[in-house]
Length: 480
Ligand SMILES: Cc1cc2nc3c(=O)[nH]c(=O)nc-3n(C[C@H](O)[C@H](O)[C@H](O)COP(=O)(O)OP(=O)(O)OC[C@H]3O[C@@H](n4cnc5c(N)ncnc54)[C@H](O)[C@@H]3O)c2cc1C
Ligand code: FES
Ligand code: FES
Image (cartoon, rainbow, N blue to C red):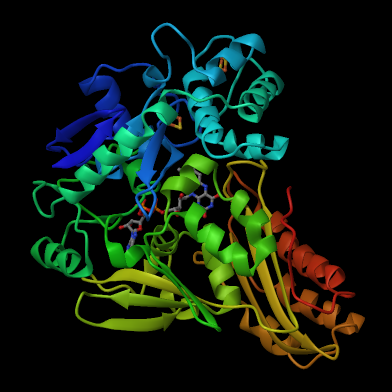
């Protein structure tokens, strides 16, 4: 039974079809048609809804946007679902809606409910947003007719001077209702969409249903349902498993549970590597990042995923678990072929272990894509060098978009180690290696030649940008 609040009403839904998206539930089952369907692929934002979650101390609610077209019902378990219909109070528009009217922020109106929900989420997340915060909040919403300036202006104005709304007024009772829902959460009662809450329960489901795919944020898996019309007869969600949402820090290591959403993982990683923020804010859009998990990004082994090149360059470890034993493998050994990994059938990714910054470290992540917001990489390159007294002690690099798997270039790493970083010959040696290191493919994102050239140029950029700096820098994401 999936239990959640529809606005303020507790509901229990027996999910008989694990393929049902939140959008289908809203529009087809509840006949709530304010939430629109545009692309059904997480790209346009017409289907944006807001999900409210209890804070860890049960004292507050945080609101985040989700693309309902690629969210499965498990995403709602123990949460509050807010749709555009819930924003008006009687006949009175919500302040974000009034601001859109005042700024002429809507024409045909198809995108408007999605923009309203993204603006509403920001309204409740920050008091003094900067324009770039607004752009980030709206990064998953496309409008084909109005133009973005009036929408951005409206959102900025509404969020700069937030007034108390019904969600603030009802907060205490909503928190109480969410606590009650979460106390009643059960394992194993759904017939075909299983939501185990701990490691042992996950192991039992996998043993019982070895052919059932795992799902986390469903931002990849749901595309198989909505774009390829695949029907799953059973799914096992890892998103509720407590152990998979942990964050642990030692002096040397940051351990991130695999089911942490990218937004949360990004918050943790950028505490230690602040300028990696640019890479993560270029990862999809805010609603996708709120839903997608770090573990899902690694497990799907896409050659154009953005986390794998970073994990390769940092020489991160992955903890793989079968419920009885955990083994640790280097991210560098994990990707074995096109979308193939070391994961055994009964295993899952438990956590990702990232080394914390070292002295004299220079780290840079470069993502090149056709669009700035919400676009997959044509090439992603991450370089990580330890340089002491101008000598390269160690270089590690990770690349996406250049091979069938996320890739490393051992020849680059071994030929640069020991070199004088200031010496132009070091730059040229790297260029010579990288010119012939990969045989990428031509596709809609970039030609093979363009990708090959990019790898060389990004190395050149890394070398140039890190000539003068003595200390760690983590910088710069590029836009094609
Ligand atoms: C509009 C859009 C834009 C996107 N942009 C980007 C982008 O810019 N950069 C980028 O890298 N990606 C992007 N993606 C891809 C996607 O968001 C990521 O790959 C995401 O991190 C996948 O995580 P998930 O939790 O949604 O995975 P899911 O879809 O739930 O699962 C994906 C796969 O991983 C497996 N899996 C999930 N968790 C585990 C686990 N713990 N152990 C073992 N297997 C597991 C599942 O079985 C499934 O095979 C985008 C997707 C969309 C829809
Ligand atoms: S319908 Fe386009 S993002 Fe969901
Ligand atoms: S107002 Fe028409 S798509 Fe935005």
